[in-house]
Length: 186
Image 1 (cartoon, rainbow, N blue to C red):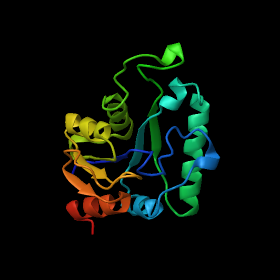
Image 2: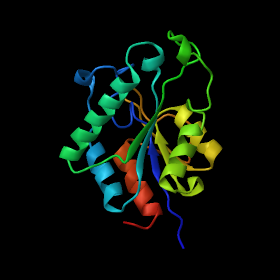
Image 3: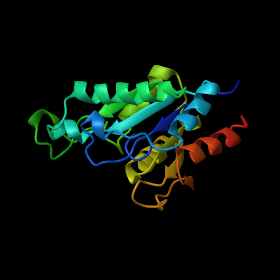
Image 4: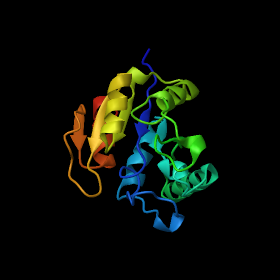
């Protein structure tokens, strides 16, 4: 029997425009074709899980509830276009945080793998069959450590970088097309 897999996606620069420390909904812009990409994953009942470092909390720019509000807004906008993210996992920590309780070196902050492991447990998926998509070495390094298939996407400002990923594409839609082809779903 085929093992269940998930697609773990970075948030800033992969799903939404990276505005450096997104803390206001008015600054939230979903990138082109993201809803189309996520809709394809939804069609095949593939869990879509966002894994994101959110140092805006550690810097005191936003609370955990504020992050959750932004995540609800992302899902609300996507749902209007027929797409749905199954869950969001975020790390509020930063080793140089302004807020002392978040000033730690933790195992959840990417490239740490704790968020992925928790999500895999919560969704009953096998990490080694899953995919990690992101625009940073943190995403790719975490995916490599976990034994997932890694796909780097171009960031807002730069083209596709050499991040030592298994695959490199221009955007989330191309990453999803690649996954569906590899999984023989297209």
